[in-house]
Length: 287
Image (cartoon, rainbow, N blue to C red; front, side):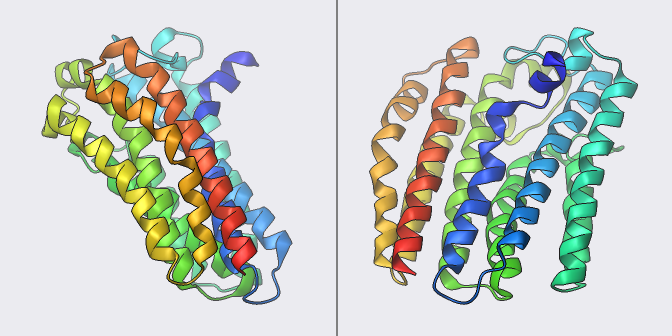
C-alpha cells in the first residue's frame, strides 16, 4: 500500500486542495454557498491530481523517460508495480473525478460536462497518447488552466452558480504557484529529459532562463493577490506567505541542480499551502 501512496505523490496534492479552498472563500458573502458541491469539487480536484500522477508514471515508465530519473520513486520505472496496474490506478482515479464531476453537472449545469471532459482528456494526454503535449513544452499551460483558473473559478461557480472577479484573479495566482512546482520538477530533470527526447518547457528554455521563470511565477502569484485586493483588500493577508518564498527562490538562483532541487519542491509546496490558507482567510474575512 505504501508504494501506491508514494506513487500518488502526496506532496503534489496541495495543488489540488488550494484552488478549491480559495474558490470557496471567493464565494463567501456573495450568495448562499452549497457546501456539499464544494466538497464534490474537492473530490474532483484530488482525483484528477492523483490520476495525472499515475498516468504520468505509467506513460513515462513505458517510454523509458524515467529510467535515469532523480527524485521521488516512480512505480513503473523502479519495477515496484506493473505498467498495467499503474494504468488501471490512473483510470480508476480519473473515473472517480468523472463521476463526481457528473454529479456536479446534474446539480448545477450540463455544460460542466464539457469542462470535465476537457480536463480528463488533458490529464491523460499530458504524457500519454501518440503526441503527449507534456513532451512539447505545454505542461505548464495545462497546470495553469486546470489547477489554477478552472479549479478556482469552477469551485466558486458550483458554490454560488456564478464566477466572481476575485476568483479569476486568485485563480491565476494559484495557477502560477502550481506551475512553479512543475517548473522545479522539470528544471531538475533537464539532463534526463533531454536524453529521453522530452522537450519540456524547461528543456526549451534552458537552465538559466528556467530559473528566472521560476522566480517570475512566484512574483506573479503575489501580484495576483494585489489585483484581487481591488475587490477585497483583506486578501492582502496573502502577502504574509511571502517570506516562505525567499529560501526556494534563493536556492534556485544559486544554481542548485539534481537532488539539490528536491528540497525546493517541498518548500514550494509549503509556500503554496501558506499562500492558499492566507488567501482563503483574507477572502472570507472580506466577504
